[in-house]
Amino acid sequence: MVDAISGADPASVALTSLERRAPLRFGRIVVIGGGCYGSWYTQQLARAAARGALEVDEVIVVDRNPTCTVRARLAESAYDTLPVRVVTTTWNEFVAAWLAEGEDAVARDAMVPSPLMPHLCLDWLIARAGERWPDRTIRVEPLATPPTTPWQRAAPDGRHYVSFATWTCPVNCIEPARCPATRGERSWTMPSAITEYVREQNGTPPLRGPVIFHCTHRTFGVGMIDAIDLVRADARVASWGVAEPLAVLVGTVSHCHGALGVLAIS
Image (cartoon, rainbow, N blue to C red; front, side, top):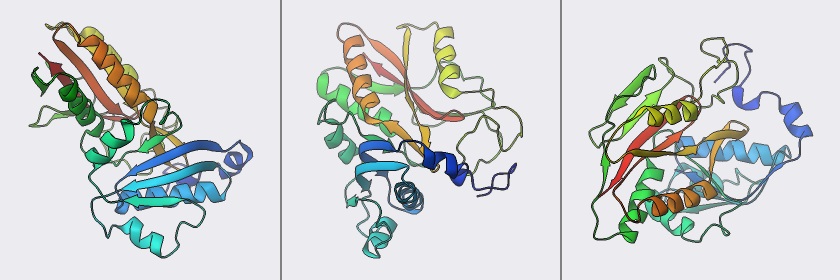
């Protein structure tokens, strides 16, 4: 995709300045999905590593399809600058096993979400709550009132999807300070909007949180969520839900878009 303002690829903007910085360093980067999106992200990570912008012990691509695009490209030596491994399993199964290693083990890890994945972080918190409290009712509740973002939709499963964009954004947009679509300042950020939304709610039990998993763009157009944020979020839910019913807003968001859900434990 080409930036509507500069005519440059947003994922390649300011490569010279990127090269001058110290490289980003990770233990493991987990790419969710090995198809069209996952292969693009893996390619961009390889380019970042080749340019000296990224150092990583291992890139793990998770896809239940044993013949996914990344595996095929790996066989063609497409990622020579990157230590890539493909794991054939479901996303939920992998995330559960990975995060079960604990805070210290995942402290240097990050996840690259897919734009079309389900609300994987919320699903993991639900599974963890079920393990912790097998005799309690755990569910996703619809939002009591819709957010006031320019675009929002409720899904039949109780999840809610929100966006500050009323246009179609390119998948490789890095959400810069100047929006390529409006050509003006990006004056919005979803974490702040969702925090304000929770502050305005008056339910019983009171809505806690929000627990926010913020996907931020780190290098060559690739957005990531730090694994340690998920582990710490689970600890917060555990402390809140010990002795009382709980309703907590969980959001996986970027600056411009988000997937929301109320994790309710009675």
